[in-house]
Length: 270
Image (cartoon, rainbow, N blue to C red; front, side, top):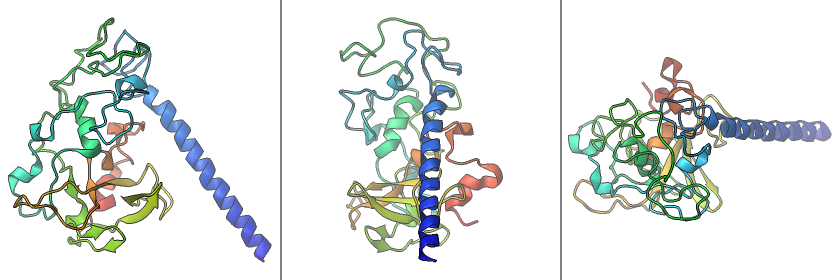
């Protein structure tokens, strides 16, 4: 019986590993076939003839902007004070504290706030130089997101809150409980010595963080409505990439298909 259980366990481990490998491969291939491929081979309305590279429009192997909490970011980001957040509406239904725009969200907005061209990079591909824009090439489109559905602008008060405590707050490192019972519980783990949280979806394995789960982002740079620091240290916050995965082929880059409001209901109990 013991041998049989070990065999089943090993099969499970192999299955998870193969699933992770397949997803990684799908992600790598997926970006090339989406609007996030802004190079000359991209399928979207905005592509740039100056390079056939895909990753360079977001990432650089050296000299990335460290003010964005994402790896080797190849774009300058705006100051958090440039954005108007949902908190300005003073909605009585929002119980969580709202942080200044930051974390992964400010990286997303470096394209999606429509204030700079998408070829305004820190490092031109292959140049080894810090530049303000590509020196050669033209856009098939306008080169920015101005006037499109993907142009969020810098007034975020009409968008889903970002930089907001998940579930009204209450979760801290090692435990706590949500202040708002209308949210599903979050999972917590330590990965590479970092505290991380996420909300499981039906698309993956329960209790294991995967790209198809709703990601939460640890932050501590938060002030309450009186301008005082939020106590409790690192806590999970909702950001743009909680619901969106820039490397997926899902519609609207959602982490899971939103049929029957699956994205919304992954976190909200309605």
